[in-house]
Image (tube, rainbow, N blue to C red):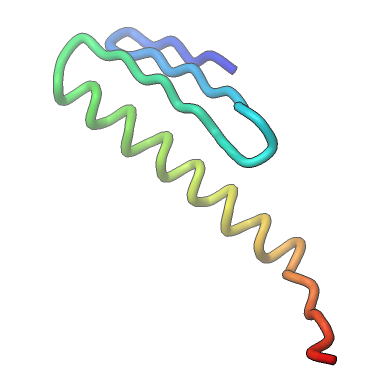
Length: 62
């Protein structure tokens, strides 16, 4: 998935089963900070929604 804006661009991809790669480029430091904050917040929300939607399965202690 690519997101290209005026001052920053982001590429998001999966690397394997459990690794998300976020490649961010920006024209300046404030744009980089804004893009990182946005995408890290979105990833955090996705993780939280997944935890709510699919709670972990309890294992027997036998």
